[in-house]
Image 1 (cartoon, rainbow, N blue to C red):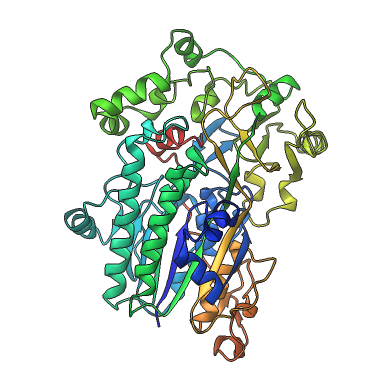
Image 2 (image 1 turned 90 degrees about the horizontal axis):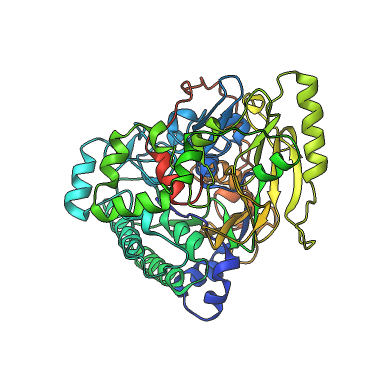
Length: 516
């Protein structure tokens, strides 16, 4: 029996419900009506990194040790990228299945791990080479499908240009992914197959509900129809790592921290480049048009690349660490939620944490519109051995708000600059097949529930280290998994997490895509 999981990065009913009603996505609607489906919550912050690994391992970020695309190292006074798979503490649930598996285009899984089957690492953290296990698979994918991990013209994506040549590249990538999925499924070799369509969410970020996004969903829906017609498909799960909603307000959290006296900044090389007009918006598109951007990213040191400021003077990623006065600052934030207290004294760190939770919880903009739905101490959101190394405060963005983590914005609140769509906590989950119900869906489904539920579906015991719950209510009453009690097994898993290291050129892609 083969289970296929289709991961649609950023997929949510909030976006696609009108298209479902209009009949534009008939195969998605068929799965929902003939199977089961509804909203599903993701881990905070609701972002690709770490939520694809939350899904894969069934562990919350406090156990994984990764909380967002970047980590603030208070001791070393560094800000580094954390999307490499070696930064995550945990094993994917499919390692516990008896049969071979095919994992295709999974974000935050580079370099690709060895598994029983095949593994293809996905964007944005993977490189354009060295992305498969076995290594020989890469040449096969390129020869048979002209396979690429990323579109070549990422830097040309712009919310004001739906005709960007990168849009057609993303459409081609979507078809490549499904072509590979269908071919691997037809082989009959696998017990479990996973595919992520990552760059769908990039279209949603830049264009939200524009026709180019609708066309991408139509393309996916048609390929789902191909999947449903495959004889080898026994069960189909569709899920997302988080949801999406439209941005109406940007909250520049580090500008707020600086205004309130928590963050102190200094001049840097980046400031001088900004004054001279040498910016990312000018340099990167030019290099892309010349066809040398990827070459430079591989050979120019990250620290040099990180000096390039945005056109408005904002500084992102590790360029931030060069302008933070680490000795005088008491807090600095990443985008989309994580906030780090820099005080070394434990009691002072706790005092500042409580102060920030109080000040930011329920924050509104100058017009009284909600900006932060809730500010939570990290200990109330995560549990596990890595909590102390992560953020001190986690912000839940209000609807239609993007928390920007750059440094140097002039105003605390502003109009959307880079994206039209932002991530939200509510994604989606659907299940289709003989074992699943057709008349209900739990209102508290969580991304951490997928791993234990799939393990139970395949007759495996669930390791006690997994945080989620086996959702037996998803199974049809007369099905075998519904009539078998879930079992938990205590397994002492040795950590395979390496010393965190920066993930190289991925930082530039993340900036082009608007994350950093």
